Image (cartoon, rainbow, N blue to C red; front, side):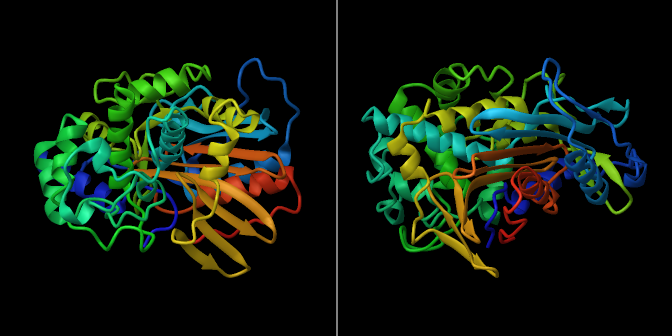
Length: 404
């Protein structure tokens, strides 16, 4: 069972296998660079004056070298105000192009937190009720799905799988559904892991269905709703739902770690972006844009205080794990929640085939940290970086301890 955040490694492997078989096997190109040769370049964002923080920079550079991370973008906020922001390493290794705070990264399952906010905005308008069955929005469902509510999808207690089973995956890869309706018809054939409302089981499928529900309740696609109600009002001009035909000019190139070094992602960009561009993992953004999202959450711009309380309330059913040191980790509605040594943390991470990210908030201490990298999810350096950076700005915060 996965307790963190990310698009399933099964899904990633299946996509990779499909694309590689279509082109006759893996890349024959040697890895572009060995991690020992990565230079420690870093850039502060233009027009931001901030004092140097050698402790942060030294730690980030060391973790990037240890974790073989080509590029990283960092933002630290204090009570909703940008406190520190830099980009480190490279957006593209082939031409030694430095990463900048303006580069876009795929944020993976951090998208789920946006999806939860979108749902709560519609709850506030009376267009969605959390305890309504999902059939009220998406129409007829399999008999076993009948008890599933919107709340079950938001806190991963629906009984739905993380990703399609092997048969469902084959159908997805064969058909590459163009619409949410086509995706929904495919996943309706996948059996549940258990009865709805009985146990926690992280589900990308469930959050993709929430995108469909947002569309039905709002009268527009979830991507349009995100743009009109979240991205545009918050002036998140570098944030988008990824599309297979997007320009990649401002994207940091995604990389994967191999036994020999670091290689660029060789998947078919159009196909992988299309299949993963749903409400569970489909957002691309910058650290500076995500800082605007954090500021809105802090300042109460969206959603309401009542909605934020609902999202960040522990669900006893959705308890994900307990770990040594007294940490209890839960899932609220679209957010992981944990308390370590008395410190409360609200967070989500994201893992994609060639990107890893982390977004943590310590509400009482007023510190938030955003970490975006262009290395595929295989280890947890992005999470270790976010937690240590938070500690460097707030000594006393614990440098641990979320379950794998």
